[in-house]
Structure formats: structure tokens, C-alpha cells
Image 1: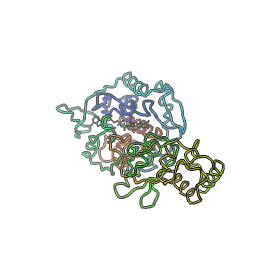
Image 2: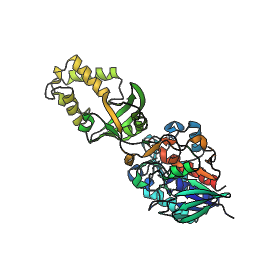
Image 3: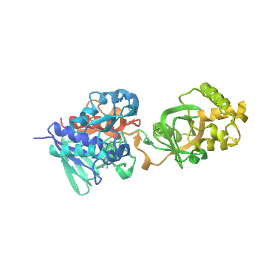
Length: 403
Ligand SMILES: Cc1cc2nc3c(=O)[nH]c(=O)nc-3n(C[C@H](O)[C@H](O)[C@H](O)COP(=O)(O)OP(=O)(O)OC[C@H]3O[C@@H](n4cnc5c(N)ncnc54)[C@H](O)[C@@H]3O)c2cc1C
């Protein structure tokens, strides 16, 4: 008799789990509450699917504990995984991995094809509402229907992007099985600013470092593209500090500090500015910034510092140069909070990892139940780390569930 594995959730982790269980010879049913499989995968990487990162390490993950993450990532080769599915992978800047064809549809399509070939049953619009223990197995409740399974993989994802499947149902299922959750907060989410200058720069993209501080203490710092928006900041640099910022906003005041020239120290930058002021002394202050920053930035900056954009650079005195340099290296704004869950690409927090066996991902609260993906208290930086964790944990949970 084949083991019957029910996989709850047809996202990245659930699809990988189903594949691994099928390869171990189990009979597999994938139960997905939505109308399609892999909806977040399809939306990921702007439709290109940043499916992993060649420079993966436990240090790129938060929550849980590093040993737990290391145990899962070890031995999982994301490139080989996709090459075997017929999807060549290419590496881009910072080790980010994408399907060579540049389409996330290829990733979901290849997984779906493999599941079909191995005889998986996939059911859409099949929301699992409850789980009951029955002898050595389980009975799942889906509306009026009851479904029996020998083992379960719970891969229900997190709270972000409800229109792509985010929701609380999975957490309710694990809580009913005896699990405890750590605090759930949005991660990889844009941040709202309580000052007008980021909004005045709406649409401007810069290479910068963004630091977030709480009571003068640095919480997180990220370097990369920063996008100013009509509510605050977005882009990789903002997303990567958002988890700490969102958590700290629950406790008190948080400040964002933008460094527009992170490649130079404060001292170096100031002497650079002074030399530049000498060199371009006949230019207007507006012209002084040509080639340094997108046009909108000096316009907003000069207005805020009360400097006349049409005055020649030679009129800048020592104090004004210091103020300009200080602001460009540390332009502050209050962070009023994260954008809503609808815009959170990941969830920080989840099922406490000590409640899960790191080698099999079996629940220590309910034997025969395996957990994978974003439901666990593990979240990664932007750059493909979340999907990589979803595939790796899904494969581990699926093969363990198949016995
Ligand atoms: C817009 C966007 C872009 C992203 N881009 C990237 C990227 O480029 N690279 C990267 O690494 N990460 C990216 N992420 C994050 C990544 O998509 C997630 O971390 C990953 O999908 C998590 O996989 P998962 O299987 O755990 O959860 P999900 O992919 O969310 O899958 C969970 C599934 O379970 C289903 N479900 C939930 N409860 C039930 C239930 N009770 N019964 C049945 N089904 C249920 C849901 O409908 C959903 O389909 C992005 C996320 C978003 C939203």
C-alpha cells in the first residue's frame, strides 16, 4: 500500500513537497484554496521569478535559528533542482538566480508537468478548514467533504498579498494541532515616511544605503536601489530593512536614515564636496549637482536647506557645505510604519522552529504532520532567499512525509 500524503497549499513549498513525496513513491494530493497553483511564484521577481541565490547562507535568514536554516539548506542545490526539471537557470548580480527563459510561468509549468507525470492529484479551490487525527492518519475537513491521508504537509504560506493566497487559515490549522506562533509582522514591505521630502522625490531611484534606528540605536542597514514613492520608500534597500523597522514601529519611534553616497565615509565625502565647490564655483548650485544625483534630489534638498538653487557654488560657506554633506550622508525621516499586509512579500514570524524536527520537518506536536515554507518562523532577505527556502524545506518535508 502506498502512503497517502496530502499537501495543504499549492505554493512553492507545497509543489516541491508534492514532487519529493511522489519521487519517494507516495500517492499525493495537493489541496490549494485558490484558483491556480504557485500564484506567488508567478508574481515573483517581477514575473521573472528570482528563484534562488547562488550566495545563499543561513546569515541571509531571520527568525528561527541559524542551525535550523543551515540544516535545511545543506544538500539542496537549487540550480540542479530546476535543471533536472528542464528549466536552465542563470545567475545575475549578487548571485540572484532566474530561469534562463526569464519567465516565472516556466517554473510553475515545469513543476506542474512533473507532478502530472508522476501521477499527483491537484485540486484547486480546495480550502482545508480543519484537520482531525484518525488512528494513524488524518481526516481533513473541506466544507462538507472529508478526506483521509496518512501524512500531511502543511505549506500554507504567510499573511502577505492575500490576493495571491496570503491568509491566516494555515496558522489556524497549526494552532489547532498544538503549535505556538511567534509574532507575525510584515517583511519585505515598503515603508511609510512621516516627512514630506521622500514624497517630494516620488518616482526617483537612487543607489543608496538605508539605515533604520530606534532610540538612536541602529536596527538594520541595507545598501542597494532605493525608490522614493508618494508614501515613503520602497525598492530592495527599503525592503531589506523593513522587517526590523516594522517590528520596532510596534514599540515606538523609528527613524530612517538615507545615505546617498555610501561608498565614501563622511570625511571623504565632505572633502570631495569642498573640492567640487572649488572646481565648479561659477556654476549655480543646481548645476553643481549635475552628474552626481538625479535632478529632483538637489531641487528638494536645496529647498529644504533654504539654499538658493540659482546662487553660484562659490557662495557656499563652510557651514553650508557641512550641512549639505551631512544631509546627503544621513537624510532623516520618521518611519511611521510598514505598508499594509497586501504589499508584504514575506511574513516575519510563524511556527516556532524548536517545535519542528530540523532533519525531517516533522511536527514535534503532531506526528505525521510536516511543515514547510513561509509558515515557519524563517524569513529571508530579498534576492531569491525566500523561494530557495520554500523549495528546500518543501523537498525535505515531502520526502520525510512519504516515509
Ligand atoms: C509579489 C511577490 C513577489 C515575490 N518575489 C520573490 C522573489 O522574486 N524571490 C523570492 O525568493 N521570494 C519572492 N517572494 C516571496 C515568495 O513568493 C514566498 O516566500 C514563497 O512563495 C513562500 O512559499 P510558500 O509555499 O511557503 O507559500 P505560498 O507560495 O504563499 O503558498 C501557500 C499556498 O497555500 C494556499 N493555502 C493557504 N491556506 C490554505 C488552506 N487552508 N487550504 C488550501 N490551500 C491553502 C495559498 O493559497 C497559497 O497558494 C515574493 C512574494 C510576493 C508576494
